[in-house]
Each structure stands twice: as C-alpha cells, then as structure tokens.
Image 1: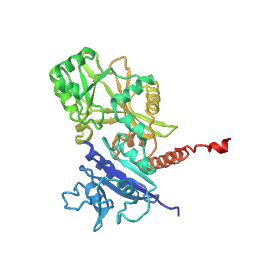
Image 2: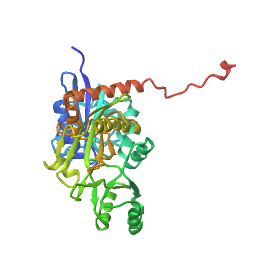
Image 3: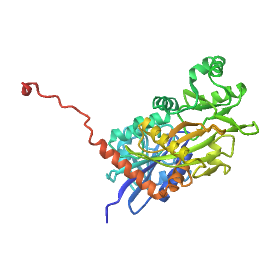
Image 4: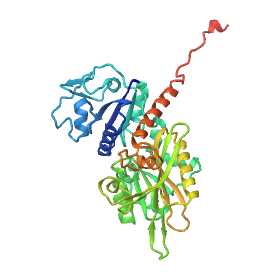
Length: 399
C-alpha cells in the first residue's frame, strides 16, 4: 500500500472571515480521501494563537481555547496540555507547522503539504504563504504575489486593466483622506461615478464591509463602514440596466471556478440570484434566499467568452491552484460582461459555488480536494528547481 501523504489543514485566523474558514475546513476534513491522506487539523484562534490536537478540534467546533481555560505557551516550543497542544505565533511557528500532530507536537514528522483554509486577511493575502515559503513547505493555492494581488481589489483591477480585460468604472480612496476631508472625498467620488455605487474594503472577502449606496446620504456611512476594515476603499459604479417596462434591473452575477497551475482550466459558468439586493455576507452564508443556477443560462458564445476571461484573469494575477472568478453582466439587451474580481481561496464547503461548479464539470468534491493537494505538491517541486543563491567565481581560478 502506498504511503499516505501527511496533510495539515490550517483554519480559523484573525480575519473577519474566521467563521467562514471553520465551515470550509470542517467540510474538507469530512470529505478528504483518508485512504490517500493522513490529516492533521491546525487552528488559529481570533487572538492569533496556533492550536493543534484537541485545541484545534475545539476551535473547529466553536469552542475557543481561551474560554476552555487552556494554557498557552509563551516559550519557543509547543506546550502539550494532555492531548492538547497550544502554540503562540512566535518564531517557533515555522517548526510548529511542520511538527504538529493530533497526539503530540514533538513527533518530528514534517507535513508533506499544508492546505490553508484561511479566508481573508493574514491567510489569503500572501502573509501565510510567505511563512510557508520561508519554511520550504508545500502548500495549496497561490503564492505570495498571486495571493496579495488577488486580495487587493485596487491592485487586482490595475492588473486586469493592463491585461485588457473589461472592468467596471471605479476609484480608490484612502481612509486617511476620508477621515481628513469627508466632504471633499464624497465630491470627488460623485465627480467620477454615478449612483448606485458599491463601496468595498480593498482587502477583504466574503462581502464583509461591502455596501450599496443609492445616493449621497448612503455613501458616507458606506465609506465609513469599509474604512473599518482597510486603509484603502474601492468604490465601483454599479452595473444596471432596464427591462421592457423601463424599470431598473440588477446586474447578473456570474461565477467561474478555475483550477490548475501553469495550464489552468475553467469550469462551467454559474449564476447567483441573490436573495437580497446584492450578494452580501448574509446572502452568502446566513440565509437560504440566494439561488445558484448551474450552468448559467447563457449563449454558447457568452459562456465561452466568460470562461476564457476567467483563465486570463487567473494568469494576469499570477495565480495557482484555485480561484473563483466573478463577473457582472448587464441585464438589458446589450448584455455586456465585466470582470469583477478573483477570489484565491473561495468558500469551500460542499455547497459553496467553487466545489459545486466543479461538480457540474464532472469533478467531485473529494476528487477536487485531492487534485488541489496534487497541484500544491507540483508547484513546490517546480519551485525547488529554482536557484536562489549565486556562487561567485574564484578570481584566481578565472585567471
């Protein structure tokens, strides 16, 4: 029997998407092929503590290590508490990722690969990816650059524009400018864009901190909300249209799942019909009103074009492993398509759009997890071919 690969599933984190991460990780742990993989959960609490064993399981089940009275070590080694290991995010974190296990943090057996299921800040933005690179650990998903670009909506849109991809009209304002001169900021926004507007933190996902502003009265509070989550606020002009009656209609929200490294492939196109005015956090995770339509009702040419654009967006941001690429389509007769954003670590429950899109493309949830692990190992193997040092020729020998 082939040796099982040791896989660390990393979840939780300090971002506003902590709870979403727990849901994704629980689904992966349930569906991952245990015949191929030996799996070890690693949690990060909202306070930034690294947890393994029973503490990680408690976090996954919604019980924080702190509220359980567990002792958190401030030393450079993991501190076993019975069958529970708790770590603080100090210099030992590099070693901790490699040596954590469900029974003991001193097993000394490194992971073959880590699957970071950390949505949002500190997990999806290149931060944890940099840690893996320093530790020379294989991991699932995009690298430091791709993760950073895929998180920052301002930088992302610049890359899309450079690649010639169609994007909605938008501007970026800084929190400092808003706080210094809110009236001037609002005037500058209104000079460039027309309502309705979508106001977003540049660096966050799952629609956290996003608002739709229909007029000036709503714009100020929307900017203030977004500013709570990031120093950069992206403000986009809404994509709208009108039906035969002349009544304004919302844009269609289309999504494509992309899978691969240097040769990425796109899934079928799906559509989300939000149960609310737009697909916000509540509509995504807390209500049953949103309706997924897979495949989306599009012409063959529209579907082909959207899938091609999804791959182009993936490459424009130098992504790897996985990404969900989101689009907006005008609801009127013009049906113009705009690239909205990429998500380098989309929601990953069994009912999330990313796995559902691949299921509709004949790749099951369990097989998708296996393929992502394979892609992470492939990328790590390819990176090992790169030389990171230079041996200066001996001057005497060169003479």
